[in-house]
Image 1 (tube, rainbow, N blue to C red):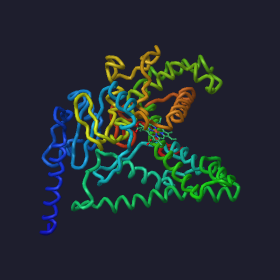
Image 2: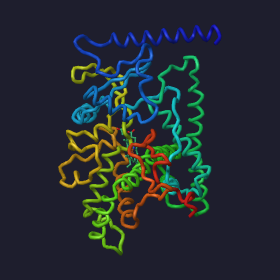
Image 3: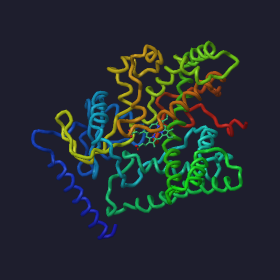
Image 4: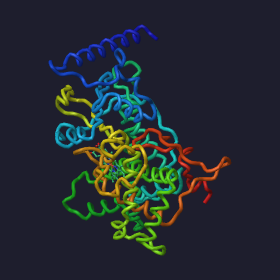
Length: 437
Ligand code: HEM
């Protein structure tokens, strides 16, 4: 290391230390900092957050520290809400101050591993752009999936070092610029394809083509209408793909572990729908057990286990603890949806019966909190529930027979991502290509 690099590293260290001390000195008299793991000199809790299965560590800290725990690291303080009532109080009642989004500035620490995606599900979602991917290697699909993966990596705070851009070695600006270019390309290329297909008269029905047609026939359209279409459809794609796809994969995973649930849901479908028809929208209301399976699915393994980060926009006091403006706030969804005081002593088990009596709270935290809660919730719920009842009515979901017997998934064997990802090895799901169909 050169002398100047040593000097600038030392300088950076001193600045971080001063910021750290300044933050601690801000706590008003009579108030305290929320409890949390003690952390280390200068870097605080940076190294305490594991690179994988972090929601299990957050769950352990929730058990250890109670309703709130707090993590600090250079440039960021993070609060986790672990109590059902407190989550409602802060995100709903004090929603006007707990609903900002955070602007990430950092370098990526971990990378995601291969996922067990259903290839045709991804193609199906591409339908929203009117493009049918020909295979998993389709360049547009590869571009979208790689970009999405990087966006998620860049956005997960626990994978981020909060380091200012002048800090030696902080080359994240270049990486983020590159990612920005990829994002733009991912948004622009499908629009160009859709416009060409519309011109040729062979466009598939899709959100993109519907919006283009609608704007082009509207004389009062804004000048930047193409940008609007790009952003709306890209945000919907990014927010919907891993969550909806993830929930569907969790369904396969859960059913493989609970064959009795599958049998009971299929008997109900036979009774309500009959063996020779597919479930209609009217039938959905009468499928009480299948609905309970769906709700328990949302609750048991929350696919977005720590929600998305909210940011507090003014100083606040919670249960006698001082929470400074700018704190990144997470609802600890995994823990909240497994709360024994709310869902009963068997909250760690998958048991759809708990939702049959109609007195358990709907697991709406699976869709986030307060003013930031998922705007695609009803779309996602209906799409996944409808898919699930159709699959159950048409198929038996069975494990693969391996050399050593049935290949069953292992509980909690997920990887980090926007949504929990089931590793291919554990998912017992095969793509059509792998099955050579
Ligand atoms: C069943 C599937 C889905 C699940 C479990 C899910 C879950 C979530 C969660 C946990 C959040 C974060 C909320 C918060 O910050 O408190 C979120 C945000 C969001 N979701 Fe979903 N989502 C699903 C499907 C969808 C779909 C289908 C769309 C769009 C078509 C969508 C669009 C969005 C958008 C745009 C946001 C960001 C909202 C904001 O920043 O204000 N989601 N979703």
